View 1: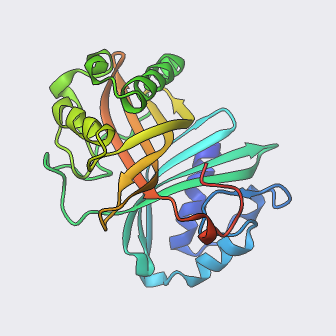
View 2: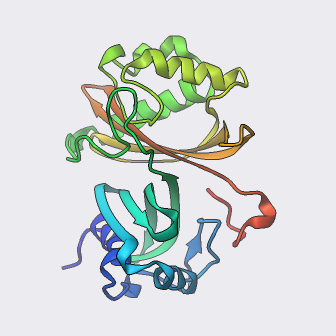
Amino acid sequence: MHKAKHERTRDIQKSLETRDRFPISYFDSRKYIQHNLNLADGLGPILALMDALPADRTRVEALRSFEDGDYSVAHLDYLLGDWGPMVGFEVHRWEDDRIVEHWDNLQSTPSRPNPSGRTMTDGPTEIADLDLTDANKALVRAFTERVLIAGRCDSISDFHNGKALIQHNPHLPDGTDALIAHIRAGHQGLEGPLYRRLHLLLGQGNMVLAVSEGEAVDAEGTRRPFAFYDLYRLQEARIAEHWDVIESIPPRHLWKNDNGKF
């Protein structure tokens, strides 16, 4: 009996560290579509990346994983050679029990916890409330479209219980006050995220991942296109906890494939 899709996604990532045989059988190389813009299509670039990672400076820990229909999701803590410590999300789409499409988002791990003492990866990992998947996905969709994209922060109490929000964003403390200020800053053209479009919404039970595009200010102070991956844990029809990974989208002439980030 095959492992669950999300368990196989974890296995693929762990093989970067263990140097076990890469599970090529999980992939359909005839159809495989790559959305990591630093890699060309096909399995060859993935194998080359594995070979280039130094064995003594490569570690992978899967913190959370789940699946939604034909999609599998993993939230991971990495050490990737010269890139150093990173946090990432990996998303696979499956057809006929083979992976045919891949998305990811990666961000360097901060050197210290956020203002509430939390890291980008700590917190609960259990998938629960499987009967609430559809309702939880609908709530996250509404929050993303109404609050993050439209900037209607006056409605945030429809989605969060104020100070009860547990925050893993590396720059924000717990609670909704700082989140509201962060969102409003982005909509005012200041240092903060500006969400433009929700591309993918995946969830299982109490965990829902929203994949969006928009703009943010990079390390040099320049506003540029970014990909936002936001993972939410829901409890009693409210967003109780939030993890995220943001990654800048390189200029078109630097893309190694023509598939786009989304």
